[in-house]
Length: 546
Image 1 (cartoon, one colour):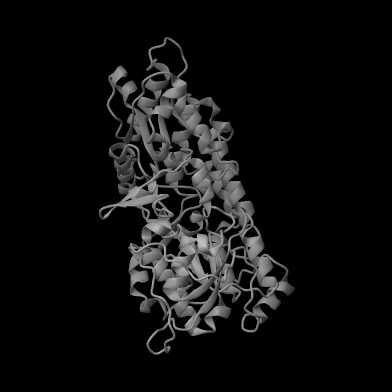
Image 2: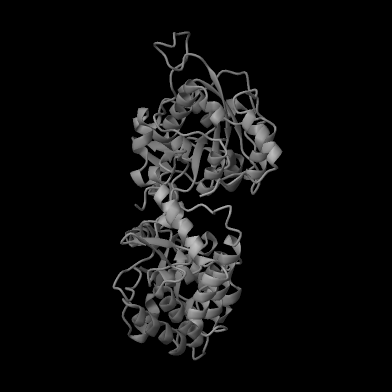
């Protein structure tokens, strides 16, 4: 695999790399500094000890150190920090490992632009957050970020905080290039069905793809709401604006969920018996496309599906009470009163597992992949003591149980309180929440299974749905490890062609009989063989294939 270069002028890249070991340690930051002493937020948190003079032999944090952090993973991008004396979380972090924390949080959508400008100016952060593993790999290949092998083993609490799969996700060619940033949540979206319509029509919950289709037909044509009108539909789905059914933007739009019933999704790659299986050309994809085209042809889905490109539109459709099946977010289903406001009727949605596909498997989709990460810059890594201090910071931030509520929920007595030994979440007025919006910069340790964090209104419904979804999620396909080959000039055109053709088959604008022509075009025009050879090479480099 050829080296992939940064998306900034080459001269600037060379300058930044040359400055890795020589640039001064200053950095442009948007966190307010203060000369005041750190204030303890309360005895319930492990705030660290005061730092009297001590030798480095007895106190590894005896010497105060400045750490420059580039934080592009905040849930409140661009939000200004308060003065240090008002920033409880900053106080906790600084006091725990004796640092002066200087943190830059870029505006929404400016994470890479801002980082590149810092690098070009020689203002290289010590710790950098990447929202995407592929981006991090590019910077690693260009020598901007460092390997962490040999260090992470010394921080047992941090290492045990995450699973082996999460750590493996952050390796590249056998080298660890970062630590997990935040846990992505699996099982948020899942299958929901109108139980009241099933009862009205005397139908059972479907368990196979054929039964699912039969229920869709009944919901569409048998007047399940008994209003005497032909105004109901079996299912509501949508299409992402970029046409990529498997993109994150399409996760809650339903088409990808229908495809997973057949075990495939666009642009995914499997390894089977020592060979790769390209989902774009796999016979199971043809089955999935044929099934969805049948839904379109027999008009069992809402005809507006071609214009629905975001989850909010799915929600609007569900709230109007004319849809019988949806692939929806449990956070929306957690508040049933919202479902009655527009429909004007009592509705009963229930969570169901994905139906069995032709192979008998019940696949909801992939579990969340640990694609975001913290990386230590190569310049910072030139000082082993700085690496240790950074990892000590991350270990405290992510693994200290007493401090966990401060980071994951926000300020004590504003967003949570203690009742005995029990943490209770508080829901302040919006104005108060807005005043503390900067708390979201620190919520990285939030656990993916933390029910307090999600504050379910109907945990017996929503929590159960979440567990159902998780139990039918499969491990991420190995294609999550692939990085675009810079020498592949057809890479984007190939993706675009696949997206367009799959949708044409679904729409019915391209007859399914032309499936072989589609594959032949991929082979001849879009150099499929060369592309797949590169996939094999990358999988071998990752140790996924022999």
